[in-house]
Image 1 (tube, rainbow, N blue to C red):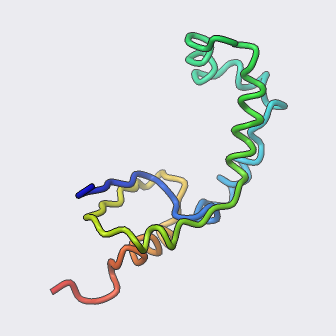
Image 2 (cartoon, rainbow, N blue to C red; image 1 turned 180 degrees about the vertical axis):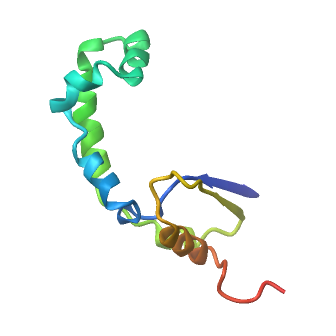
Length: 112
């Protein structure tokens, strides 16, 4: 791979805003009635072989969303040209984006 673009992704779980982490903690089958009204459920319902499995999918998604991760070592090892793409309404604070950028070697010294 010669180039990589990373979009709206934190390098570690605690790189998200606290309210985003709280929202992730609330994703589970207990929110099924609310999710049943969502576009996500409508898309799932249109293609899923087992529509009744959606609450189980929500619980499995919840487990994944709450699993800690830190990819700092892997990011430091990237050698290809890497572009980080974030927007002002992403779930990642600017301070974490700067940390990610520094792991890639950016912003540590004058580029000239």
